[in-house]
Image 1 (cartoon, rainbow, N blue to C red):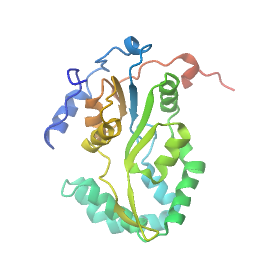
Image 2 (spheres, one colour):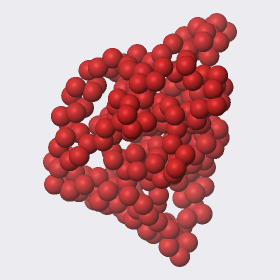
Image 3 (cartoon, rainbow, N blue to C red):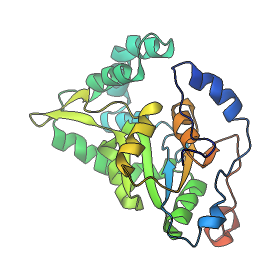
Image 4 (cartoon, rainbow, N blue to C red):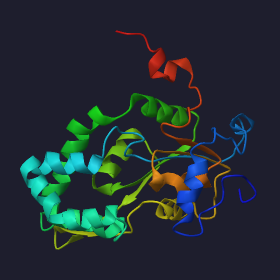
Length: 255
């Protein structure tokens, strides 16, 4: 893929912002025509961001507020506010701001309790914030035999459960630290955002790089992953390729 368009990675912290301005205003581009590979043995991978792309919301906020209740969540957010504000002003990074929020909300809680909250969230709550058209897009890729990967800055705590339920091949997410049977509130991996998404994808496929990479995103944190792809889609800017009618929710008969 090294000779194909949209393979360039940003070389500095400032460049992605300049690149995104032109990138999101471009039409959907096919560096390799997908139909040419449809009946080959090529490895095709579809990478999906989660929050804002598959969902209509910030899933971590919904998870924490649902698990703790709004009063406790709001108190935790207030305790973390100086770091959240510093992150918004680019005075600290997202990794440390997220740790401060998680330490104030999940820090010290038993792992068994938190993991039960995660299972309940996936089973009972998460579906209400999922976009039907993106679930249809996921189903289309899986029906074509493509490998599907969830790549998100949100915690694997609940996203891995959901990804397994939906048939993803893997979930590359932010890992949370557990020590002595309790969540510490610290991250056990780098926050899976921006360049880290590309690093995780490349570590996952190792030497077996896909011939064709689709990527779906909605924010600055997806720009490097979208740039790495042959076929990329940015929510609100580009129209996704048409799905067959039986997979397109807009064509389904009303019951």
